[in-house]
Length: 202
Image (cartoon, rainbow, N blue to C red; front, side, top):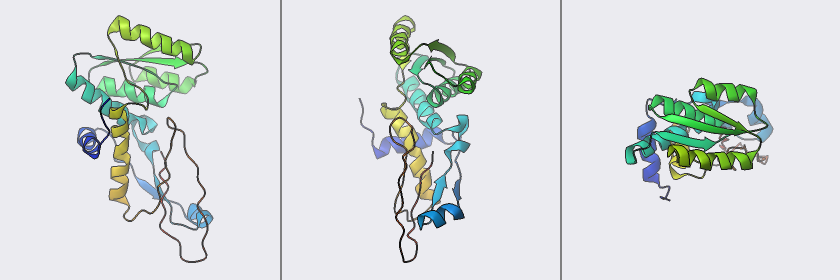
């Protein structure tokens, strides 16, 4: 596995330019008041497919298509990464297979289909993994992991490149961890002027 370096993230910025949305940063007086800080929200809900996962999926497909002959890609996803992979493949002329284990969101299932992926609904995660291995063998599909992939990580890292361009002097960044779940952290209150804190919301 290749290393995730600043150079790889900068390459992802180049590849995603004009494809991924340059998402806005919003503020909230209520959050400022509750936290005793200046809070900035990087709104990846305005990204294509409604999530930062599109960045990583598109970057991964672009890099993989330039380095190997396969035009078939597969993943296991209950939603956002599957949508991102499906759209990324459609935009780059590739085929996407998405294993969706139950229970699943009907809306996200429809969204993955609408982006052109072939969806395989299975009973649970273990069967999804087994189906993924089967498809990888039958179709010579390249597996794109939802988060443990250097190209995916670098693509998603472009969020921070934008954020530091949009807001100078950030002191604290709160970011999601663990496959995309949001991390919540309290900001301590102070008696003096607020410190410029930030909250990265994807």
